[in-house]
Image: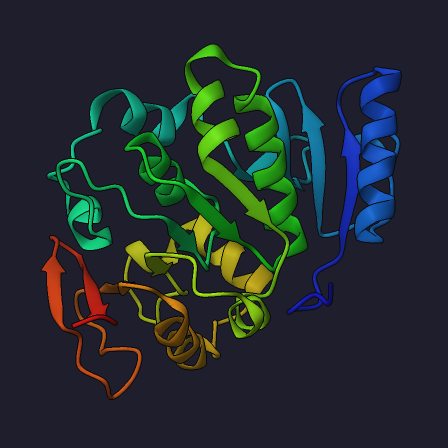
Length: 264
């Protein structure tokens, strides 16, 4: 798939294992990225590197150290915390998606990113399909799901309730049957000089996928494809994605969910 921005990326490994080296070579071939056998050989801006805790997108610093930029981990970190501590249907995301007592909508996360919200919804019992068009983000997601599928506490969640699609959501929604109760959109936030939007992780994702300038078109396609509702996550200060007013809004401290009902 075509890269949005001209970032040079290679694939490598810090693990001296024939299995992992073969895995790195296979990923490089799949993505049509150069393969570098060791990190000392890396001559690209960024690199997808297999490390002890999984695949990471890294930057090689002048000191030779690896600076981790992106990593998908459904077992530990933020996703692990949300899995252990924040599985309530009273949270704003659950309310926006349409989760109620005894009701678990099927969900398409059309802008999967690092999969954090999709994982929460799967933990809450929803069947979640994730669309990701960035080859780098898709590879990180695929690796994160694979590792979580081998972990006892996350095995059933990711294996039975999460499905990853390497798709451009616009193309997928144009051709897809009307099978999802809820379609979830979390496009790149508009540019703004603020600490939240200048976080390293967000800057790197923006460099990989661009500014999501097709978000309004994606919303229109989602409205035609969703059985019950489309949910759009927006910064608190940002305008709606289109001239269409949402049916209602679920507010949060710094952001909000705009909900567009597609059924009476």
